[in-house]
Length: 141
Image: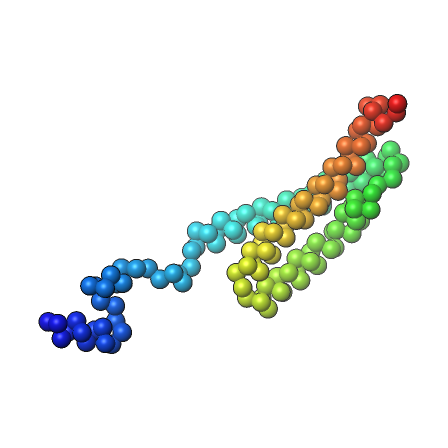
C-alpha cells in the first residue's frame, strides 16, 4: 500500500494525504465578478452617453439663452466630447487588446467611464450653479 502512495507522489499526482486534492485552482475565472464588472461598465457608459445626448445640449441652450461665457472645460464637454469620448474609448479598448492584462481591462471598463462622468458632471454643474446664483441675485452686491 505504501508503494502505491509513493508512486503517486513520484508521478506528481496530488495525494489525498497531502491535502492538495481538494484545493481549487486559483487560476479559475470568477464569472460573478466579470458579470458585475460588465453590468457596472454598461451602466457607466450609458450614463456618459445620456449626459452627452441630453444634459449637454440642454445646458448649452440655457447658457446661450442667458448669453453667459462658459469655462473652457464646459465648452470642451459641450462641443467636443461627442466625438472625443468614443475615440478615447476605442483607443482604450485597442490598448486593452494589445496589453491583455486584467488591470487594463478594469481601467477601460470602470475607471475610464467614471472619469468621463466626473468630468462631464463637474463641467456642467458649476457653470449652472453660478448661473442660478446670478439669477437669484446672489452675484450682485
